[in-house]
Length: 296
Ligand SMILES: [Zn+2]
Image 1 (cartoon, protein in one colour):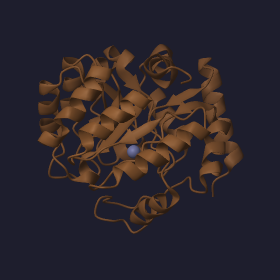
Image 2: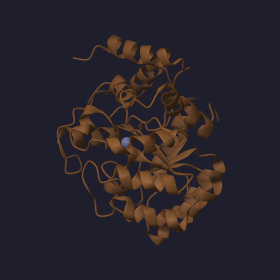
Image 3: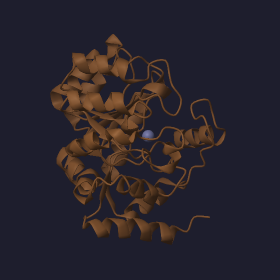
Image 4: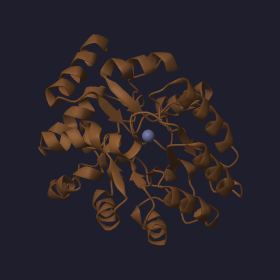
């Protein structure tokens, strides 16, 4: 059983020990309730995109989950709904815009899908002030090189708007996952501020190379280094010195609420890498504050 008070105490103690004012979590999910319910059902049924038992730890209403994040001291976070097929991005984007308007600490999140209107709605959202985009190459099962996305990648690059891309082949490989296809997108749009979700698991080395090659590419820590990920796709120890050097471009991400362990475990998993307190402070707070700011 979860003891919520223990959970909060662990996270708070960890943050306090680093002397941080709080946490900035770049990879959190909030979605319209009906969609979140379907996502959870997919995890519960161990659907084809999941691959193994995945008992989600943090459920409840939006308000309950907002309260949980606040109790942890997560002071700013994304919402990251993502379109899994054509024709749904508009609805998700309207919902996410409203959600960010109602909650100061939520990054205004948006998504897109390769469809003829994508270029224009993404440009409109950027003009209006969207702060972060998210796409999921595995769940969406689309090719990121699709010509319909060229104006999208260009608009994101020109406006320096970060886009979280789940392109790694974890937990289950897709037709267009891996660093190859998205790497071609970066070669065409080298100034794209892409945030690699999950450190690119399990292709950690390939995505690390992309971050070393393209100065605006960042890596989010989402679920990486945890016991849960390490059991299937351990992070290669020989990459750690390079990850240390990439300190300014690693962002805390958690995947809250869809995680099968306590929030504190993600933090402890980062700490046990042994990259030092300065690295942790940059990753868990400073880098994202510099990228997004504290308030719109
Ligand atoms: Zn996620």
